[in-house]
Length: 392
Image (cartoon, helix red, strand yellow):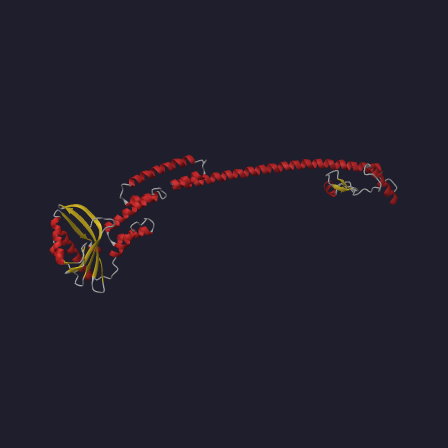
């Protein structure tokens, strides 16, 4: 049969004063020897008091082993001993509870301090991170850098400063764009793209820069200038809106065929004299450089040189106040010799349009295409106009 321990309330055997855990604790912590078991008679009531239990125990011990003398402990004293031990254990238990409460409070204080320390460190860390991001934004000094700070710290210490600096940059950027609208300075466009890499005007600026660099390439009208434009487009600096045209022109003017100085000098002389005679209206001189049969003369098809001469003279009489001067770039003459001993020549040209001997317009970017026979007489001549140009 089980009963409850008077100290902890756990189950214990009927013969034991306390449960096993409490008995061990009393022995270990308080160095008190607690009687292990009490032997009750089989018919004894559990409601009997501790004095009767003590008497029965004493009688059984006397019956099994008679003891005489002053060492024998009376039953009343045994019961008193048990009561005293019980009071002592209860007192120690209360004292232990007080110690537990104090220890618990100590742990609670440590926990609170630890939590406070953690929160404080988090706060300091966040402030440090904010300072670092703000300094990085000021170092970059771009709209996107300040926007990044404002998005990360909407209630940040420097939010107002970031907003103010961003507005200043926006206004400065808009003003710079307005100036570029009327500018033709390639350097200014490049500087804008470098200073405002994420500008909303970036695509417009790049398109405008592309046009300006293409116009510069046309003005130079050399294999090198077209190569520079293509390199800029390949690098991503330009969108390359005129890339295909630049590539075609580069192939026209790039000297890939091995030349001889003698042939090149003869070709340059013929080209120079032909265009000079054409500019001066000396059409009879022009026909001296033509083959008897010409397969193409500018926009006209196959015809004899005599008919070409008549056509030129007729055109001149109709436009007496208008003339065109052809200026070939002889240093950029490119040619190749075919297997049938013909010469294909490409030469950059500039045209000056005159009205009553006044220059009204100068257009660069033309490329003259001339084919000569083995005797270096012109079989064919026509032009590639500047990209997008309407005038021939």
